[in-house]
Length: 228
Image (cartoon, rainbow, N blue to C red; front, side, top):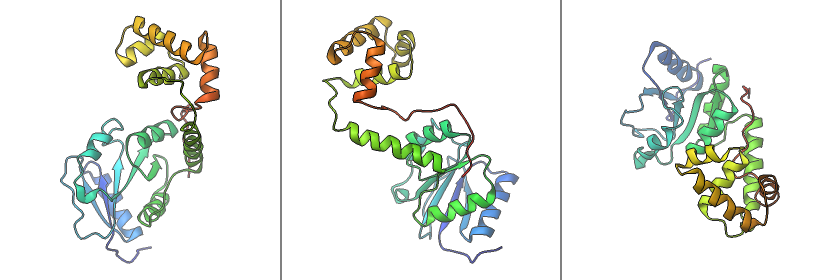
């Protein structure tokens, strides 16, 4: 059913192709918003839009490239709503949310009707994510808020980084490779960490982390697709 045209706009950030053109036409017909397609290198502006949604194709702009792309957006788009589509699973969604200020996430398998409903909600100032993903984020931020009031026993930022990798199950060698330091340096940091938190081994350290810091980063389960 065709909707009445609106002054609000959706910019789909993706490759120009027959498929993306059909997607844009479908969104326009079923939402009533002005829908345009732009590549990642296009110059963007608000134009005559009252409200604007930037709908980013994660197959076109990788998660790693999202922060730099967002940093280069003009100031006029600072208040534009951002969402990503073609997200593969919860792992991918959490990565995207940690890299960019997204308020909406659309999984690859979701229908066009669901995307239209999400686009409408986003341009009305709502969030659009799966219930499971939202629950995961709420739990993480609640624990993070609690952790802000807990002592860290004088741990440095580097030691907190090492603790996060330790919690993820990384070996000394893996920690060294991730942080671009030697294994000897990692062992020295671990020695200092154990001394500061008064433990003697990794198991005791992991117990201390769980009791005093909670999850330093959102825990990521095995990949699985989700439906809204």
